[in-house]
Image 1 (cartoon, one colour):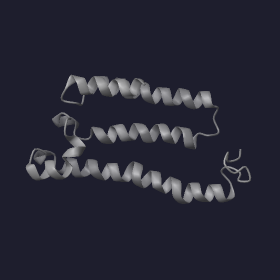
Image 2 (cartoon, rainbow, N blue to C red; image 1 turned 90 degrees about the horizontal axis):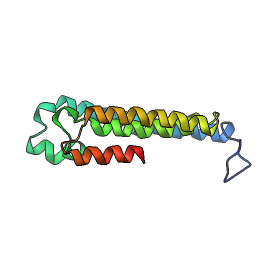
Image 3 (cartoon, rainbow, N blue to C red; image 1 turned 90 degrees about the vertical axis):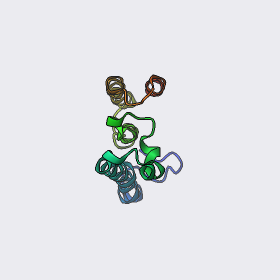
Image 4 (cartoon, rainbow, N blue to C red; image 1 turned 180 degrees about the vertical axis):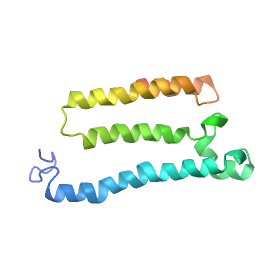
Length: 135
């Protein structure tokens, strides 16, 4: 397989592999996993003071609108997005229909988990998130 924009570059070899494993993979690990995990750890450590004015001002955007027990839910949503992107990028060797089925499985599991947990304080927000998973 070759890059669409530059057919002189063969995918997963030489320069492409260097960029993929030197920049893309570390970027996914850092921004897609490490940063959200650090955020969840910080919220968990301060979970008893999430209603404090200082915490709300600083980190409220991460958990405002969520139930008390689901302060971490933004990380769950991000994990779903990273999973789908990773399936498409790193399972390139599979047929597109297989990739689509794996992505569909991720979405079905996400749907069921969201439906069971109902992490948002209002039913409207829960319904909206379910619709975003379905679409």
